[in-house]
Image (tube, rainbow, N blue to C red; front, side, top):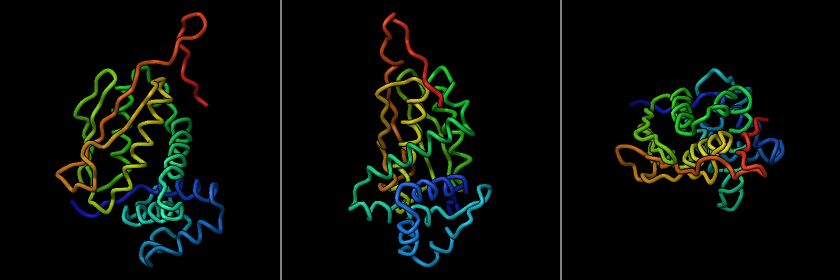
Length: 203
């Protein structure tokens, strides 16, 4: 496989989220801290239909985590907000799927359109558990795990699943033949006062 690229939609939304959460000056400082080729690749305006080097994107994520003293919490929360906006906007039909396992397959299909130079395969999708494999990422892309995990967790939450988790059993940093994320969740939400299951809220 050749160079791994990421769709402009993800880059645009991530920059917008960082600008909102950190402020324009802080975002400009993060971009200025990148290597010249990475900074040039992420120069705005970002075209949502264009492709951008994943190396530059992951360098920006790493810079944002470094600015948070190595704490990944803020980035993960921002990633979930971006995912929620996408799933209740452009991809709003995802959140209306009845079965979380069907949603996992849709998210994996979406990731095939998010990344160029990679392969995405759902190797298991059953009640309350799924496994998805990614081929093409290298060790320097390891922080993309945070965004992928956030995407699945938020999507499952919006589908009505609860206690959703996304853990890489084969991390990207292992540099094996593939990376694998294991998804687990509980079916439905707690019953309402009449024993009825609340419908997922689509905002």
